[in-house]
Length: 222
Length: 223
Image (tube, rainbow over all chains, first blue to last red; front, top):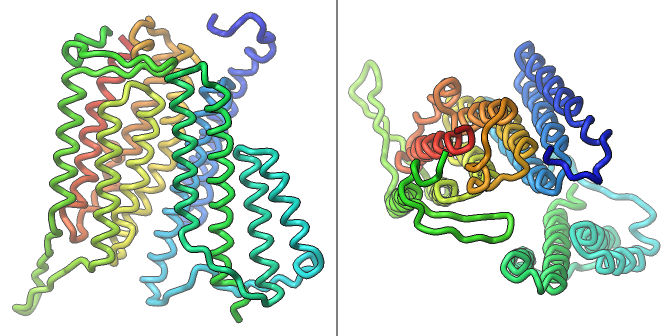
C-alpha cells in the first residue's frame, strides 16, 4: 500500500467510486456528442468530457494530482476558447460578416459605481495584498478592475498604463525563481515561499488589471 | 525496463527532490533534431500554392498575408520548443503538459486561415484534442495513483501491475488523440491543404516525434 498510515481508510476507499464516476461522466458526454449533430452543442458537450478528466485526476487527491489539475483546467479552457473562436470565424466566413469582441454595448448603471468605489477598491487591494498568492491576486485584481470601471462610469479620464502585461511577466519570473529555490536550496524555504506568493500576487493582480484595460475600450460604447 | 537499455548509456542525472532529470543519447539526439528543424522552419518563408482552375488557362495563386505569417511562425516556434521539451523531459507530468500544449498550438497554427474546409478540419481536430485530454491526464493520474510518482527514473524501478497497464493504455490513447495520429488522423488530414507549408509541416513533425517518445515512455513504465 502506497498510502501512508495516517490517512483514514474511508478516503482510500473513495478512489474507485470517484474513478468510475469520472469515466461514466465522460462516457455520457461522448454518447451525447455521438448523437448530436449541431456544432455548438458538440462543443459544449466536449466540455463535459473535460470535466470528467478533472474528476479522474482529482480522485487521486495528492499534491501532485493537484499540480496536474490546474494545467489540465487551463488546457481545457484554452482549447475551448480556441475552438469556439474557430467556430465563430468559420460561421463569419460562411456569411461574409465580421463581429467585434463584445457585440453588445456594456452599460453599468449600478449604484456602487458612483457611491464609494474608491474605498471598496482600496479595501479589496489591501485585503488581496494581505492574502498574497493566487487568491490575493484575484481579490486585488478585482479591486483594480472596480476602480477602472467606476472611473469610466463616472466619466473621469483614466490614466493609461501601457505595458502592465510586462509586470505580469516579470512577476511570474519571481514565482519561477521561488520555485527553483525550493528545489535547489530547501533551507531557504521562507524566502522562496514569499517570492512565490508575492510574485503570484503581482502576476494575477496585473492580469486582472489587464482585463480592466481591455474593458476600457469597449465600455460605454453606444 | 532499465532506462539505459532503451535510450543508450545514461549520461547523467540531475536530482531535484521529486524531479529527477536524466539524459540519454536518444533523448539528446531527438532534442537537437527537433530544435534544428524548428530553427529551419523559423527562418524559412512560406510557399505559395498554385491552384489550376478547370475550364480555362488561369492559375489561382494562394498567398499568406504578413500578419497571418507572423502569427503562424510564432506558433510554429512554440510548437517546436514544446516538442523539444517533451523529448528531453524526465517527468511524466511535464510530458503530458507538452503534449497538451502541442495540441492547442496545432489548432492555433491553422486557426487564421480563410478556407472554410480547413477551419472545419481544425474544429474537428480541436474537438478530438479536447476529448483526448480525458485519457491523457486521466492515464497520468492513474499511473500516479498506482505508483506514487511521476518521475521516469522512479517509474522504471516499479514492477507493473494491471492498474499501471490500464493507465498506460489510456495515456497512449490520449497521446494519439492529442497529436492526431492513426485512429484520429481523419480529423486532421484536411488541415494540411492550406498554403504556408513549413509552418504546417511542424504539426506533422511534432506528432511523429511525440509518438516516438510516448512509446519509449510506455516501455519504461510497463516493463
